[in-house]
Image (cartoon, rainbow, N blue to C red; front, side):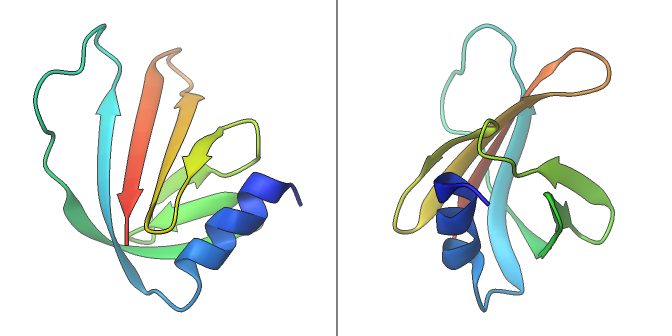
Length: 88
């Protein structure tokens, strides 16, 4: 495991539910995007939201991890840039 993934796992440790905001990059992020509550669990190299949305959590996708937040950015199968913001 990488350092960022280890930090993300520590951030999510003991939490069954997190606040997430997922959006497709559209050139400019305007205003505050709302957060939604989601069930979360880590399985291998994926963060699974609501038992159906897989988010890769390899170090190359984790942009940042703070004391109570994280940002994951990856390219989906349709070549769209996906941003996942997490708050606990």
